[in-house]
Amino acid sequence: MSQSTALVPFRPAFAILQDFQQRPGLPFAEYLPAQLIQQTARTVGCFFRERIFTPAVTLWTFLSQVLDADHSCRQAVARLLAYRTACGLRPCSPDTSAYCKARGRLPEALLRELARQTGSALHQQAPAAWLWKGRPVKIVDGTGLSMPDTEKNQKAYPKSKKLRPGVGFPLVRLVVVFSLAVGTVLEAAFGPFHGKGHGELALWRTLADLLERGDLVLADRLYPTYWTVADAVQRGVDIIMRLHAGRTPVWFRGRGHRLDNRRIWWHKPPRPAWMSVAAYACIPDKLRLRAVRVDVRQVGFRTRRLVLVTTLTDATAISGADLAELYRRRWQAELHLRSLKQTLQMDILRGKSPAMVRKEIWAHLLVYNIVRTVMAQAAAQAQVRPDQISFTGALQTINAFLPEMRAAQTPEDAQVLWEVLLWAVGEHRVGDRPDRYEPRAVKRRPKNYPRLREPREEARKRLRKRAKRVGKKR
Image 1 (cartoon, one colour):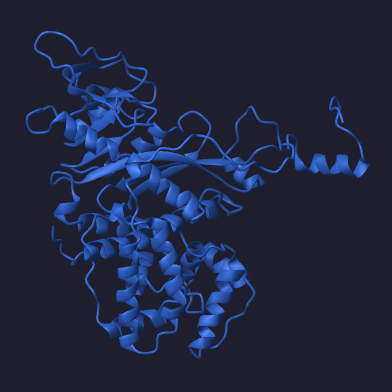
Image 2 (cartoon, rainbow, N blue to C red; image 1 turned 90 degrees about the vertical axis):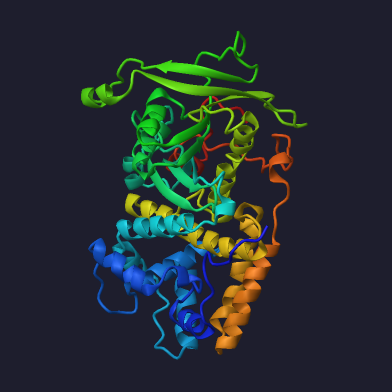
C-alpha cells in the first residue's frame, strides 16, 4: 500500500541549515517557526523586549528543557550558552535567573495555542489510509499528575481530605483528546484531582466544542452517560464506548435479535444539578443506540466479554467485528499517556507554583506533538502507520542527532542528517502490542524503608530529639 510522503514535505537543505542555526536546543522547530511564535504571542497579548531571551528563544529553551532527560534549568541555560558560543555570539550568563524570569513571563495561552495548532495541523493532514473507514477518530482519556508540595500548589490543587496535613502531594487531573490517526494531542483540560465538579466527565464537558460533525469519539466505560451521548448526537458526532458498569446489562436474547447485536433505547433521566433548565429541555427524550457483545478469545487477557454501545446503528455497513477492532485500538490512548508521563517524564512535575505547573503541562504536550510530527513524516516515508513506530525510539534518535545537527556547517550535511534521522525513526517499530500480556506484579523490590506518614518537619524534629514515635515498637 503506497502512501504519499507529502504529509510534512521536505524543505531545501539551505532552509533546514538556516533553521538549525536559529533554533537553539530544538532543531526540529521547523514545525514551530519563529514567525508562528511571534504571531501567536501578539495574538495572546505577549510582548517581550529584544534581549537574549526573546519569546522564541525562551520557548525553544523551555522545550529543549522538556525534551532532555535532565529537566533542570541549569542544563537548559548551559545548552543555550554553548550554542551561542559556537555560533560566535556574545555568551549569555550561566546563571538561570534571567531564563527563569523570561520563562515566567511566557503566557500560558501561548503554549496552549501552539500545542493545539501543532496537534490539529497534523491531524487534518493525515492521509486517508490512516483514517478509520475514511473518518477521523478522536480518543479521550484521563490521568493524574503529581507536583511539589508547596503552599501555592496545595491551595490550587488541594490534596485528599483523608490525608493528614503535610503528608502526600498535590495532584492535578488531566483529560486529553488524542488523534487516533497520528497520535497528537488535539486538546486538553486539567484541574484539581479532588473535589466536586473536577472529575473526568466535568473536564470532558469543557472540551466538547472540539468535536466536529463527522468525527468519531472513542472512550472507555466511564464516558457513555446519557448526557455525553446526547451531546455527541446533537453535534453530528458518532461514539463507540464500552457500556458503563452501573447501567442495566443488555439482554442479548429475544425474537428478531442476534446474540451479539441488539437495538436499545436510552430514556432521559432527571436533570442533574450542574445542568441548566434550558439545556435540559434541548436534550432529546430518548436515544436510539446499538449494543454489540464482544467475546475476547485472546489467551492471557483478563477481560473475557465486553459490551459496546455506539450510535452507528447500521449493522450492514459496520459489523460488530469492525467495532471490536476499532475499540481495541482505544488502548493507544493509554500508550500515549505512558509516553507523556514516563518517556517525557511528565508524571512528576517540577513547577512550584500553579502557573508554572500549567505551563509545564502545555510545554510537555507541545514537545510531544513535535515528536509525533517527526514520527508521522517518518511513517509516511516508511509506508506504515504512525502507531507502528516506537515513540521512545523516536525520542532517543532525536536526542542522539541533536548535537550533530547543531554542528552542521553545510546545507548538504544538514540534508543528509535529516534524511538519515527520518529513516532511523521509521526503523524503530513496536511489536504486536495489542496481543501482549503481562502479570500485574512487580519483581524488583523497593528499598526497605518505611513510609513517611507524618509531615517531614515533624519527622526532622523527632530525629533531632532522638525520640521514638508513640505506639511504635522498635
